[in-house]
Length: 154
Image (cartoon, rainbow, N blue to C red; front, top):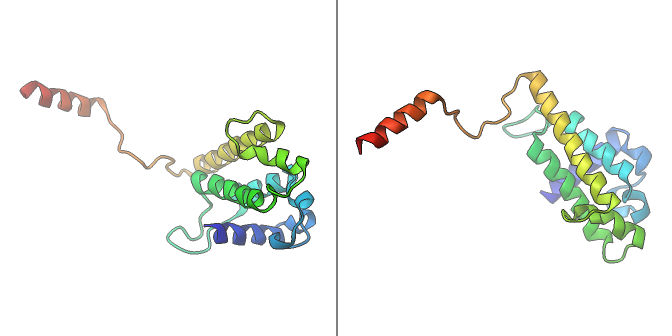
């Protein structure tokens, strides 16, 4: 998954205005270039609204909520792996956004960013008329009544 996320990140950087924020590929970036909220705000916006899957069974579709937020977190984890051990205090503070228990400004920003992605993706899905939850068959009163009758026979 890391290679795919990095590929998508580079695609965003090259084709969708990311080059203005990040002039070089990820491998060559310095911590002060990539550890900024505006970079991840724009990347999250790209994942939620612009990126279209290029191959596989979902080819031509936008990312669903799960993959979109996973890709964002994966990219943030790659930044953390690259800079957390050797980074400045400012970088380490920025990377506290990955700690779900943190109450830092960075953590609050990242939580809000994920919620914004969720709203955008749900809105897009509603407008398209797609079913959002395909995990279970709905249960209606008729089903409950039949289950009750089955228990009564025992």
